[in-house]
Length: 369
Image (tube, rainbow, N blue to C red):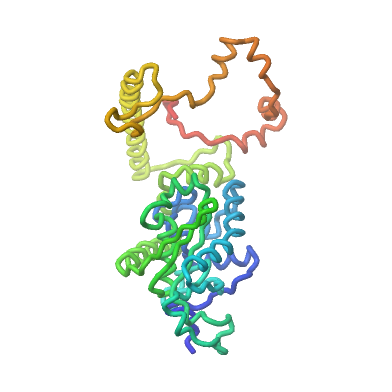
């Protein structure tokens, strides 16, 4: 017996580990949820997040919003798998735990479920007594990734398209790379509507993924070389809170690093000027569109009623200051007290705490941010 429980993967750690032990196992390689982040396709994490996490240099900070979404997804995972089995006719198996590629031990997979496709059910053998994980794993033919989304997030990720959204699809392809299976399924519960996709193994894509992710593992994680931070807002937040800041501490640069910083600052100024020009161009175009509508709110095609071109409705932010000025008596009726942090008092009484929770702002000597 070679220890494989899929065509190319063995069991690294069983399911049911404590969160601490599970996180420790994750640090030994790259999992499916890391791939999109490494490639810059995850809105919530970037390459720097993955690097610091794998190096054990990133204290786990849970975004309450993302944490709630993760708990919701975990609770709904069984329901998604059950609905998928009912609709597809395939047999769905519990995942054994963390899988590890037999030749590339840094390639890991935590599949939500394994699948025995209906075409293989007739030939599904009896339980294998020499496999302690339970019956059926050698007969599984695919992996299943279960997702749950609100309609807003589903629309943003394009769950109504003809193919699986990019993020879950990348995750599924990675699981195929690790397990050696020929197919993967991505099933999503969008509010109360189930949609699912079958993804066939793509050797060329898998080859690219293994090469790119392998280079990241070798050149950055193992070598201890930080990757480029990238442009994600989430990475900006990470950098802002990554270090215990030493007030007014100075770091000196010399030689080639000074030239590199000068080049970055010059590029930054050029982009800011481009942004100003683009903002003016955008304003000019939008004003022309608004002028064409006049007192109307919606623009439609005359020969195709119902085909909306654009709209300019009163559905934006409420102008509170203008309302108070125009109708002070009415505004007084709708004023209510709001609990807010007394920032001036906090800054005066606990300056260290106040400073610790202030955002870091990048400025140049001219004062521009």
